[in-house]
Image (cartoon, rainbow, N blue to C red; front, side):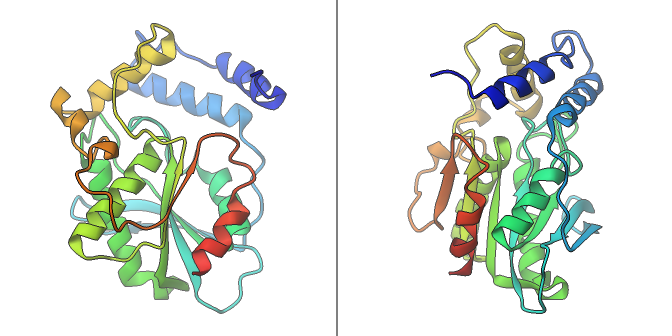
Length: 257
């Protein structure tokens, strides 16, 4: 199947911004990948309000960016906890800004974008712990920012989708807080080494080594949710593996239930 012309153009633009991932430092890779993403990012849409905050967690204060959708009324709104992509090593709430704005408007919800800790500075399972802490904070504080604590969804792209599904398993086993929906966009359900020898595959292997403390952790369900012993009684999962530009309106009715 041929690549969509728009995707092909985006890949061509991003390829010009690539860094020598075999020899570059972690910070150099981060900056180069942010620049590549910025080169193809959509223009940010207007939302009602955007607010940067920090939230307390067992690991210390973490940054969040909260988005209220355009046309917001005084009624409580569902809350979507968003986890950005980046292989647990790159990207942040700034690179996730365009899609979070889109999600807020299209799904009619408040989006809380979490700046979870990154590897290699914070290794497994730090991002999972951060997500669970943010989920707990939202459940306890949603009314203070017009959110409905009974309608919380969690989702993200790539490793962000992985973390989201893991958070659902942990919340189920802990008896809460409640999650209405999990959204996984091109998720990693098993953390394994890519087989290729291209630069992106080599970078993925490097990121995996950054994230895990030891190889055996790759089979821990918190890194690879497909290894969970029990996946019953979980919230609905919306899994997107292709075009992600048309599904956000589908999230709106799912968040209302």
